[in-house]
Length: 102
Image (cartoon, rainbow, N blue to C red; front, side, top):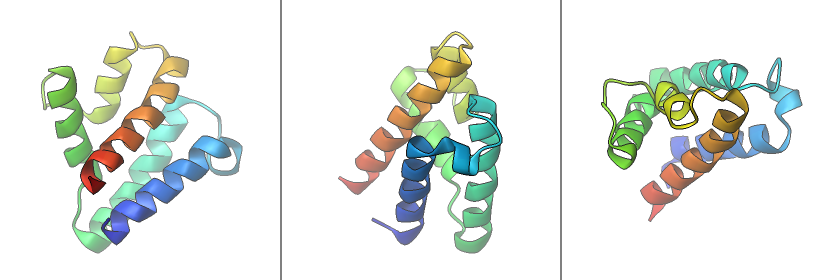
């Protein structure tokens, strides 16, 4: 696994186990903001756009428009239920990272 993917996997594991240490609130919106900043830093340093790649993967999986950002796709799948979206995003990011490392 590429080192930037390992870093994303690691931070997502930490966020899932201890959200209060990283997020201002345990909400999907707080998660989006934190991960967005984190992945932007990786993009600036490595040139890898996690947001774009994850959005494209989800769009194919859910048969949605690839123009939708990943967080909009997750909210769509959960009927805008933020609690369900927070649970689903952890499952989907882990599935995506496992897909990439297979």
